[in-house]
Amino acid sequence: GMIKEYVFSGDYLLSRLDWNIDLQPSLGTALHVRVGDWVFGFSAVIGIPAHVGWMKDYDWAERNSTGLVYNGVLSNYSEHDLLMDQAFRLELSGYLHLGGFFGGQVWLGASLGWQRYAMQGMDGFAEYPPGSDPFFLSGKVISYATDQILPMIGVLSEWCFKSLSASLELRGSVIGFERAYDQHHMRSLDFYDYFYFLPSLEIRASLGVSFSEAVRWYLTGVVVVFPETRGESYMTDLSVGKSYQLTSEGGASSWFAGIETGFQFMISE
Image (cartoon, rainbow, N blue to C red; front, side):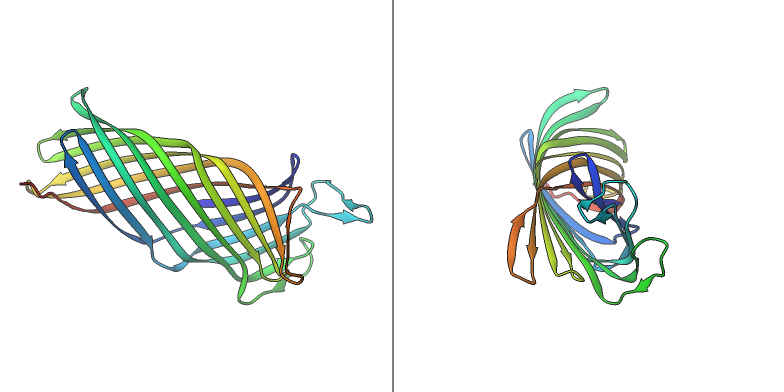
């Protein structure tokens, strides 16, 4: 996947950080209970800390004696290894059975989730300005943590063919919330961005094979998209211990694609 951070001055892009996640290994578990036409569930997915990709930092912030030039020229560039410290998602869900449709079963779902990523930009090099001789860095350069509260609604369709099963789920939200925390260790600056009415869209497609009435293996593909959104931005200058609300806006967007596999165990009375 990819997480992008932005800094805007009006419609002018001042800065962008790209956090590229090549492969994030994770472990998960879930519990679902059916009561009549309702299914209630809890799930947890926890990422394994690892070096998972790279991070690149771009600035278009050239200045002269009067301030920013806004000329669109890349002024600073750096590139670093990406270390994932924390990655998890916790979710409560509920589904209401609506009935049959085209040979399958349809469910109306709602969920409330908390998703967190905490990452480090490590080592690497910087060119100030780009094209100049690079200087090499060691240790933590930039830290980034994002927490998202995700209330979502959607529709789930399921089909069964003897021992085979398939499902497709589409869900989304326009009322999510995100808090992003960005630490620039070289400059002793911390930035906080707050995003309200965070939009998101998730698609899940699954295939399953039942070995008995109690055991099923499944394979699921997942795509999640968070379109670009903007919000309030604050800065803390650690050298003087003061915080300020910035006139610039923070921005964020991201997408993730993954594959899940595992076993489901059904227990009935």
